[in-house]
Length: 219
Image 1 (cartoon, rainbow, N blue to C red):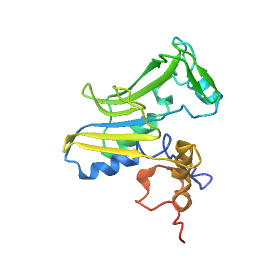
Image 2 (image 1 turned 45 degrees about the vertical axis):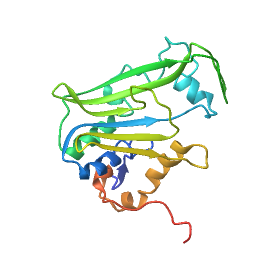
Image 3 (image 1 turned 90 degrees about the vertical axis):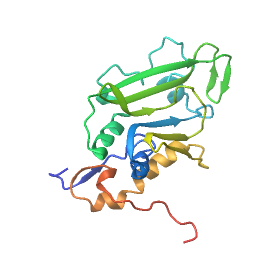
Image 4 (image 1 turned 120 degrees about the vertical axis):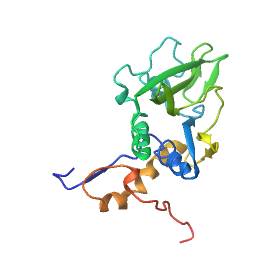
């Protein structure tokens, strides 16, 4: 970046702010923080891409199938690892370790979806969890679903356990039909001017001030 005089912006795991910028912003009203829990809920029943939902994520495959998302490589290669790194930087700490886990839910009956059928007994749900540990306890958790497996369509829950207890529910819906893809792209596009103006190097959300995004339709 320095040799070429350019900046590289890491917007974070999709959509690029719910597990990074949002918990940092909410923490502005916190006192004691015991645990930050970021939960992502995505209902993929209406997704039309069998390549993504079936082949990459594993929906409809036998329970014993190891999907591409169940990467046995270094935890640093996990898609949510950058969220843990940003939490370290934002709060000025260093996790003892970052651990991950995956859990599957199986279909109780056949489920018709746009790309085919999820047969009874095959994979119908996937939970991926990444935790930053301090003193043997989780300090930061990034989850795609919480323990009780609720449902949601493009929903994010941020829980800051401590004093005060803070809970934030974040729902989004796009007319494109691909809410997560839409907001993921906008999280990057709305930072273009900041990235162009930035000094050369790798930049994150912590390098930029709070600025408005989007466009006002009436203008």
